[in-house]
Length: 364
Image 1 (tube, rainbow, N blue to C red):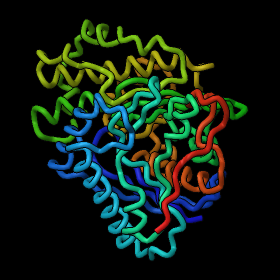
Image 2: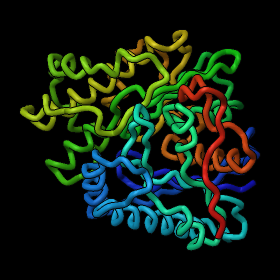
Image 3: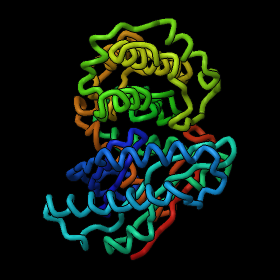
Image 4: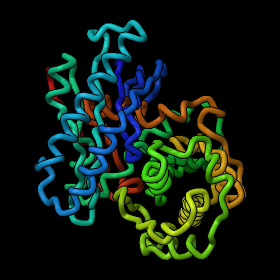
C-alpha cells in the first residue's frame, strides 16, 4: 500500500510528511518526505492551547482556544499533504491511506487520558482519501501508556541496514524516547525525559525563534551542574519502564535566572543526563545508538550524549535513514497496520496488557 504519514510533534515546529510503500510488516520503498512549518501565530496558539488543557477531563471536548487550535492543526495538515503531492507530482488517487497523528496537547496515561487534536474526519473529506487517526486511545483504554508508538516500526525501518544488535533508536523531539531492539527482536521502549521542548521554549520566549539552530547558543554557554542535579531529582527518572511523559511534565524554572546561553547549555546537559539514566534502565548496553528528531541536528547535544553514553552514536541520516522523516514514516506504516488489524503497541513498549491494535478510520 502507498501510505502518507503525518507527524506534528511536541516541539510545535510544523508538520512532517512522508510517503511509504509498505504492507505494515516490511518496507517495500521509502518515498519522498517533506515539511510544512507552523507560522509563529500558529505556534503561539498551540502553546496557549496546551497551557489551558491542564484541567481537561474529557478527551473529546474542545473548549475555547482548544477548538481554534484544532482547526489550525487540521488545516496545516491538509496544506502539508496538498503541497507534498503537488511537489512530487503524485495524484491523490495514488494514496491508499493517510496516517494522521494530530497534535498532542495533553498526555496523562496515569488517569487514562491522552488528547491529540486534529479532526480526522474533516481531513479525510478535504483530501478525499481514507485517514487513520487517534492512534493512542485504544492502548490507554486498555491500561497502557499510549506512547511511544514509533518503536513498533523501528525494527521494520532498520531491518535491512545491517546495524549491530542490541540497537537503541533515540528520538529527540520535544520529548525524548528510546527503543531497544534486542538480538532476537526483543522490544523495550519508553520516554527518556525532555529533549528539545524546554530549550525551544526558552529560545522562543527570549528571541522569538523556534529553536537554537545548530546548538550554537548552547555551545557558548556554561553548564550549571547544580541545576542539572536538581532537574534530575524528578521522580519520573526512578520509575521503571514502560513509561511516558506529558510535554510539560518538567519545570525548568531553576534555569530562569541563567543567561540564555547558560540556560540552553544546562538544559542540553539535562537532556543528555536523562538519556544516560534511561540507558541504565535498558535490558543490556546497546552496541550502537541511532539518533533521530530535531535533537539530531544539535551538535552540542550530540557531543554531550556521546560523552555521557560512552558508546557508538550516529544520526539517522548517517546510517541511511531520514532523521527528520522517521516519525512521519512510522505513522504511515502504523496506518497500514491499523487497517490490517496488526499491533501498534506491545507490553514492552507501552505497558499494554497484550499486543494492541488501534486507530480510527475516517472515510472521505
